[in-house]
Length: 368
Image (tube, rainbow, N blue to C red; front, side, top):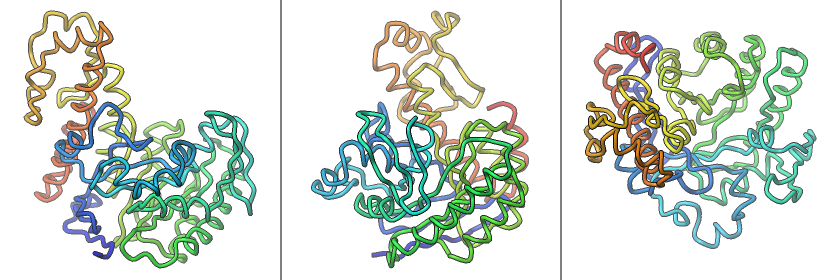
């Protein structure tokens, strides 16, 4: 099998054009990963996701361990066969969902996260070793370490304690991962909004050694300015020879600002969730297709979109679909949004290649 590798092909200040090599195919970076939470990118077939230019998707350890369960997926030949996906798949560790979904959870330094399923209340134990075991059992191509993702707080002591716990779990995750040269194992930098803790977390992870480095603990309620400050604080310390992944982010202008600060990989439910609720992302800004002003607008959603024949559906028609609760509306807008995000990533890569990223960033940062 091809060994997991990353290389930087071009730099434009801190913005980086790169490539991740996996045995399932290469991933051009900066890259956006559509989210396939429960072994599906909601409202889309995997074939259509691939047609948008998506080269990797993300799936969710927490949800898959609860339903349908690892045994059922393994018996089907792994997650790729289970969902008929030949793209590389990154799986998160489950730590974020333990924080965000479970009202009854306990964090134990040795046992990991002890929580009740949000489906039926069944108790689960998710240790670093168990998280890695599940992800390897799923057949993930990029595996994330188990970390604690704290809720946003300005309490330094809470974030410091959480960050040190995540470092301890990172060591255990690395040991549990073992030797899997054809897969990637990513560490997760924690530390909240505190520069000192972010750098301390990164330094600890670098000593352990990972194939990539993610920034976690963001997209939890902080402002965009606060997020960009965290990225500015740490960008000089991130290893240049490894991919940088900003977890759970974000809007198109979040992505533009983060690429400017050295980020290579993104995931977010926003394009699919927004598509299901009638919000479209376009090169001319956002469109709430349910608005009455589109009832007699026979123009395409985005005249600059040239992929998948999506422009054959007018705003008038899409407005009708949403206002009559027809599922086709959600399907079309979801696909449109994923396609727009991939067009955005392609344009970002082209502008980095041509040394024009700053101009591209400045043109669209307040428009998208």
